[in-house]
Length: 143
Length: 143
Image 1 (cartoon, rainbow over the protein chains, first blue to last red):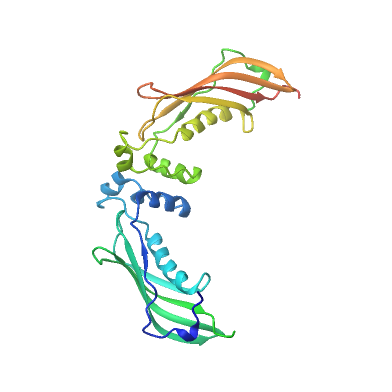
Image 2 (image 1 turned 90 degrees about the vertical axis):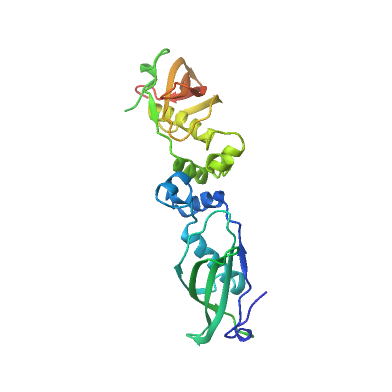
């Protein structure tokens, strides 16, 4: 269902996106899709040898979940900016919750823009995986 | 260097091809390349849960080594038949040796064909991974 600029206001929360539980094979798939074959994401022995508790998710995969939070809400092609800071590792077995809040709205260069902040957190322990800010463009009614 | 039909005879051995040691990340890469995401090839826990000693190589990857034995020798596009039977699992850390022997030669339908048999074995323990038969087409001198 289309979300219109006029219906969105600062303080609004985006519909939560729950992803997971993350699986090891998902990281194998992501490695191939992204061409990122750093073995800390897929080979437990290597991950442990560098001091990790086990294989960990690619940060860019977690960022992609944040992107999906936005596109599920505002639509494909809507994202104008997504800026994140990674805060914690994600291991297979974890389920993640992506949340966003609208903080501002403005019309610039003929685009109706919504700005906000978002987080991705572990569902079980509320651990922060990443936080960031976003700008999406929304359609206007009657345009 | 081009191998010519006239210079190949039954009893000839193909140049050995040594592959390895096989790595876990190579199986991650092959999973993505082949689209075969069976976790017994990449997720140790899953492999062990089904009674395997650990992750094992995709059979088709080992067969591809047999194919490379042929194309390294006879050239790209030369393989007319490659028929194999898998005999044993290959684990990361193993190095494989691919060998082939020419058993027959014949000219059929304007193609100069060489038939033979091949094996892929573990370098350390001589364990048989696969054996098979092949037919390749070779160029003739002056044609």
